[in-house]
Image 1 (tube, rainbow, N blue to C red):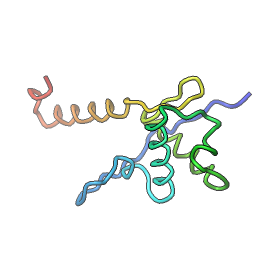
Image 2 (image 1 turned 90 degrees about the vertical axis):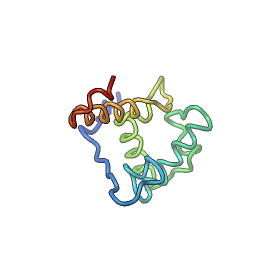
Image 3 (image 1 turned 180 degrees about the vertical axis):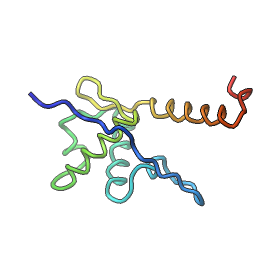
Image 4 (image 1 turned 60 degrees about the vertical axis):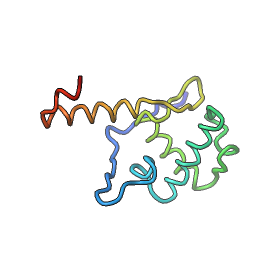
Length: 117
């Protein structure tokens, strides 16, 4: 029986100070991981889902890229950008809900409570 997947306790998000990113994925990934994350998101948008065991054929991931693919998927799942439903990965909106809550917490922190309701 396979072991239960572990998700990280936290994920680092790099917030650029001087220049806004071109994509949200640039806040989380860089280099080869960014390339694979973009391929995953593009595939999910076009096809609606990705079966857990078809990633090699669908995304062209092989060799050393397999390890990077699983790291990317673990981070996307932990953040709520992607969810797993009956062995199929699908896009999810939990990440945007978390970011909205973070923005509301900041409004509350700076005293602009009237803008929250």
